[in-house]
Image 1: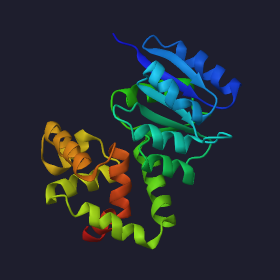
Image 2: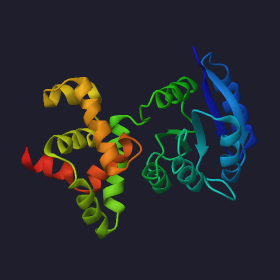
Image 3: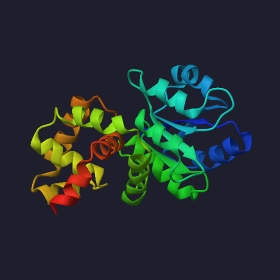
Image 4: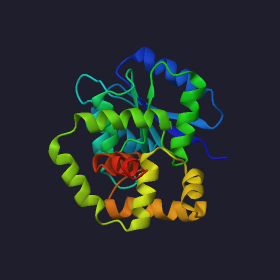
Length: 225
């Protein structure tokens, strides 16, 4: 079994030490490097080639948001999970918009942080449906008026079936739940999700969910039902 290569980024040495001790104890996770600021991340990624970066948001020079945006703009970018002390912080939303695969709270139990790293390495976002809905409500309530128009223009490239899948992703449903609800196979759902990501030039399901909320698709669904 190939170990998940993990890079830790946090300006607090005690936090890094705790994470390293906790995550390094998992048989399938290898800590390949540590950074104290977002400005160190790209060079470390080039040198260590991590699969996942566990990224603090608030750092003194280059913050985690900027570092995440820079990383996710690269080819073969590692997955990024942001560390935060808040459930629905605006900076978390911004990190998700630029491509982070999810977030974990700093007081999350060790077993859940390990599970989050494994999930992201496997290509799954680290957001429960309940937390996703909370973040979406925050995103819709705080966005500028022009955001919906831009989101609708982007969503327009999807066909009807892809649009239905995008709405289901926005509701926080897993592939199996989407397959049951839309009467298709899980493999077909995965194909639709891949096409949506490609058409909209997005990184992951979290960004699909954010765009669906921005475009008002979930509000439309509620009105129809």
